[in-house]
Image (cartoon, rainbow, N blue to C red; front, side, top):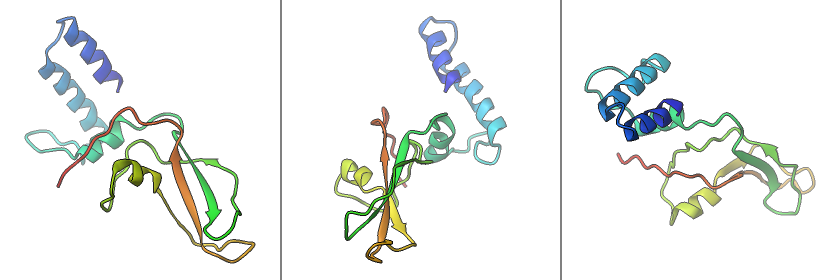
Length: 134
């Protein structure tokens, strides 16, 4: 992200061109992962770019396991979800999709033996939203 920020400032000050910024970032991406970011006129996946460029250094999400049938819940823990997530199915809205992030937990509730889920939520609202269409 630093290369993009610095490149933008150099472009604003008319010290470099957008093509030079692009080529510099492509070089960095290629070194980072030559299988995902090849040279030439080969398209890169938006998702791969997001995962590479927008992965934060600190945790941006939390998760919490809770019972679906009673008030049992475990303490919140820092999550390993970053701002780059992929929707696997359609939702009525982005806010509903983000609110529904999570998964079913294998172990049942210790109090009622009911199913449990692990809810995932962001600590702060993401500043950017990017979509990749098939």
